[in-house]
Image (cartoon, rainbow, N blue to C red; front, side):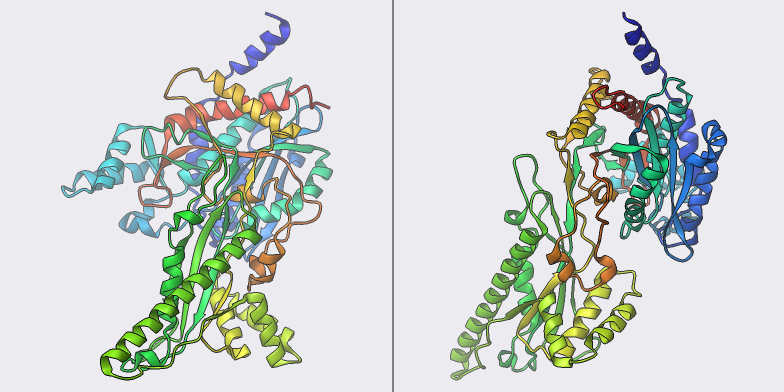
Length: 564
């Protein structure tokens, strides 16, 4: 064995202490950090303090930073850099905000105390004789000793704990090559404002640090209801997401004379039937198939009771994609909405004719075919009707409606207001986007750093051997919407999305100098994240994953073809 091989073997043989990783995870979980709360805002200081306890950062405090993000009180990103030799850098990323603890109900007070929560859940579940299949699985998992519960432990403070342990081990290597960086961000659960603010700050940070980010690993969670063979996965990219909406304006009629108008509800039903779960609309290519569009919200917009058919109806969809462009998706949405609306009106007109035959006369006028406008076209129509001063009024109304944290509510209210201002009458449909665009990403093996990251992962996979409990599989796209859409992805947003998203804060505008580097997702696995029985699989999260990530980082940073 050569000296180089001996050195590699020696370094590879240094395993990360699983108990240490577990301690980091439990400590961070004990700090409540629900999105939008003071706990989220204070978490960065606490994490900064935890990292400051590590010997490297005691000696190099200038390599530990807080970067402002958003909100009041101010939330911040945490950036921790352990330097080796040269500029080549791998970044590990994770978010520290969590969803609400309300679904723990009577155990809410224990939601962030993992060990006490585990005992309480086992006790409460064991006392019941009417356990559901889900509860039976949770009880068996918790009693086995392999799973640990807690709000945010799985999603995703265990991933952050892995990153901290990898930083610590890297710093202990006196012959370390390259640089290893941790970025921890708020607000992944709502609008990824933390990661987007960090993305905007990264060009300045890398200049200040005098480093070059060559690749990234996002440590977000995966779910597996089986033995973990699907959860132990590395994702070569992430799914994209858009939230198209349709605001339907019908022609109201008295319930006793239904064919004198056409209900917005009936038109919306035709649109919903056309889109909901339609497998033919699933984005697909040679590598993957995304889930089809699904309805997130459908509602009649009346406040009170009337014996008339509804004039306005709102529908918003979740549409995941990975190979389509946003422009192509919007055009397909337009086609499907118009087809579904026309089919609904034609069916209603046919029923009117049939009813007319029954009563021996005309039941009502044949409704017109619905007119379809994009939000951009609606806004232009409203500006023409209102005249001078429209832009100032629009800005005022947008600020008013943007107070809602719910993007669907804010979008609907602003669109409804514009419909009234434009004096748009039915039958008509306005379409646009009601949420932040999450772009898809994937490794490009024609690029040097992408290929280097792929090869480093392949080496780590091979090192796991044939042990089925430690296997690691490749998957093309991470299906959970995540910060991966903004980590190392420098692509600018679609103009069609910008023009047709009513709320400005929901339009992502990456800077021209945004960094581009390959990113994969490789995180812990568990079950039921966001739910009462959220739990992480301890042996993998604390015992296997840290060594995998560490090995990937070492190989990637040692890549002689890219070293300075």
